[in-house]
Image (cartoon, rainbow, N blue to C red):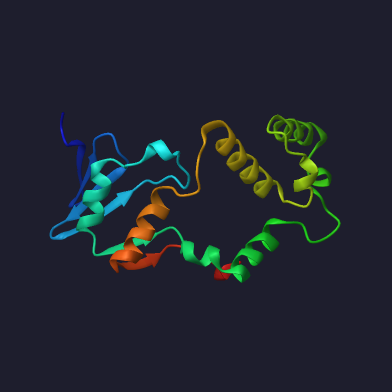
Amino acid sequence: MKRYISNILLTGISLQSFAQTSVWKVTNNDKTIYIGGTVHVLRPEDSPFPAPFDSAYAAADKLIFEADMSALENQEVAQQIMKQAMYNDERTLKSELDSATYALLESEFAMIQMPISTFAKFKPSMAVISLTMLKMQQDMGTISEGVDRTFYNRAIADGKQLEYLENFASF
């Protein structure tokens, strides 16, 4: 089996994708970056990750994550996110969705034995994210530590430099 499934040359940049993973190696002359497609939640049996993840991690001096996950552990940040994800006025999920959509969402929550009233003040996007996470936990046994959190924790322990594409200050 080949180590790489593709090798594309585009304007002087070489892009290689490791077989059976979502890790890409991008090179331009003497510069290399690795791009890893990650999943935020996994099942316990999804570990260990394919070797290219470890290889890319070992070769990296700096890791750039979607967001600073430690910020989510900050009570003020978590409250600010929830404030943005919920209606802070008379609106409710039921008042903002058409009746057919609300009924469908209500039946989906009922399937996981969760009353939709628990999510009454949630904006639709947060209600759907919550439903998805609950269903994944129930149906697939997912846990909250995915690829990104695993390597984030490892980078902290190893003292690697970290950067983030997003921050929660904008909430």
